[in-house]
Image (cartoon, rainbow, N blue to C red; front, side, top):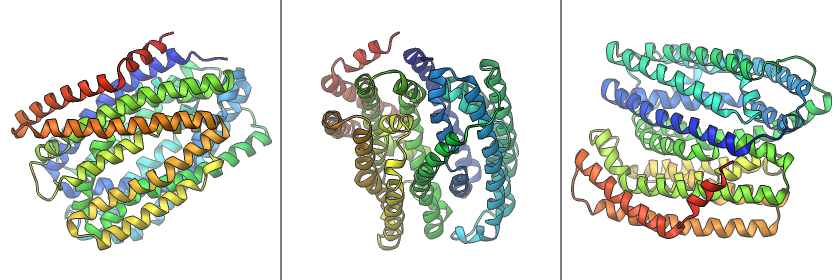
Length: 507
């Protein structure tokens, strides 16, 4: 069964656009209430527990991604019996994963105190709070999260996104009221558990409504189980490297610098993740479509589509990076009320913009790589990059001056991604699926885009800093000037590329 790529991409992009707006606005309001009502130490607790549970999520090993990608071919062949067998296999695995996460998480209870430098808020019991977070993480595995693979394999991520968006809106409204009325962090965390259950119930209902003939029954053949296990071994190594890269930053900062430093880092990192969510509207809408086209189209057609979507993503990334370069620090000063503990010097936001660009510039490549199940070929890449990141983290935090320790954490991540991950994963895609000519075309486009990004970011930064106003009026004026300068530069650099790409997406 050949899926309608353009229709599904547009449908997913609309859902993702709405979701990104929600993820941008409501978490910002939520984080702001935390800062103003509870203080930065509570934000630090959120970041710390998120990192610990991110490490625990390694217990999932990567079965979800492996099963989704394994289902692309039976979807293309319209083999419903095989899809049902995959779903039953996945359900069994996820229930085991949920139990493993919960038990391993409980085993970490005696060591929580060693992960916090300094004191915690006096009304907080770390162990009780941690157990509530742990229950929230394990709940999805015990419930119906496995049903999401059916929607993902059919390129219907818009359904998952719409459910998550609706539940998120309800959840944020509820926790806003909880924080305003009770100012009780325990109530806030318990509410997240309730909404996790609600989201899973809605997900299973939607999956059964759209695909009533796909239910968990039957036995997956031994050779296919072995293939999934082989993919999982490689994906697990990717997940280990990803956790080392993404989750240990907060752990290192907490252990060496304290919870307030975690909150300061988290505020800057939050801006990156929020803007990255806007870019994800483009590339996260394509995964299932790429997976289907790999089995229904030629490599030449796949490369044309890959370059087209990469170009569209790059244009969005450069615009976002330019606006971040112009407005990052003025926004942080307003958001944190110019708290000297939370507002860093100007190098910090510039490094974050660099981090944002290199991370997002590889996302379309990673989407295609996942859709093509190319995990084994670079399974050592994330381990090497993660080790470099962790080692550099510790060295920078120990030896750099106090004012630059957080910058060292950011720069260590940039090193791992730019010097190891990007070259390695691009080599895998172009050697295993495309070819040398396509590789040269890709790198020419990548280099040209990087030069444009640096120039346009510099213009936007200079334009914004030419505005002498401060506060909200200054932020608005800087945004207006930076947007105009960026738009002019984008028009000169890319001309009609964006319109051409959008026309090609029409059915």
